[in-house]
Image 1 (tube, rainbow, N blue to C red):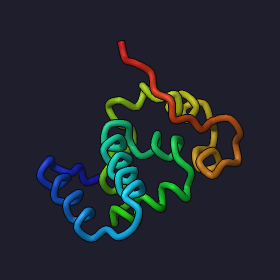
Image 2: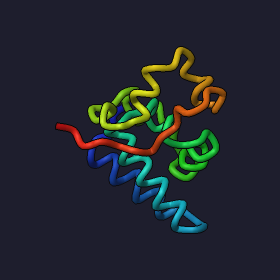
Image 3: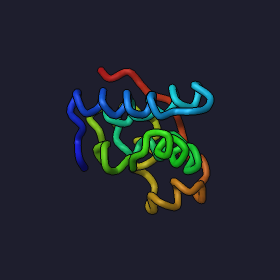
Length: 111
């Protein structure tokens, strides 16, 4: 994983905005995905979003999540998806939707 510096992150977002054509809802969602993913990690993000949504955001941002996000971020345990992720025996089957009831976008307040 290549953690982006703050400067690199701003440059990536500026480059993405400059080159973007389409609905700004998708652009804003992709940027939000990147910002949240930096703290939650790509594994949690894969449990929060469908594969097609992840691919869409990665295409907009011109990156692979695994290249710019930690596998498990510092706030991963805030995510309900984190608990589900830890409970499944096959991560990739769960991500693909082959395991029911493990996807969640909910987060908890850390104490």
